[in-house]
Length: 129
Image (cartoon, rainbow, N blue to C red; front, side):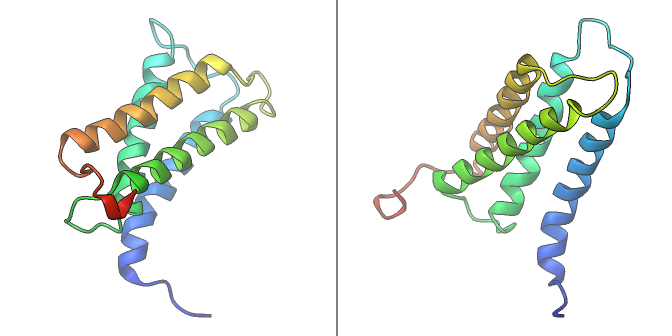
């Protein structure tokens, strides 16, 4: 079996560890509800995930990435959010909640938008469309 290149590992290991943290938090039977509800936490968690995924999908290169790459990052983030809500439906004391999924999705878009604002994502050229 071939070894995983160090560069690939350094890009995707933070994503996988972050996802594992979300999975762990979702596995808690009855987590304490923060004051004001948990939607801001969902948004912030998935905003952080989106930034890490954009970084990994862009292969960590210092150049700007195309909107197509951002779209893949959004797709990965939302797919993980859906899988997380499904996972919660199997945890005692937890349920899948569409409102949580909406907050997660907003977080994914906000994280991607932050990457755009920071200049990590640039407008597409004709060749990238």
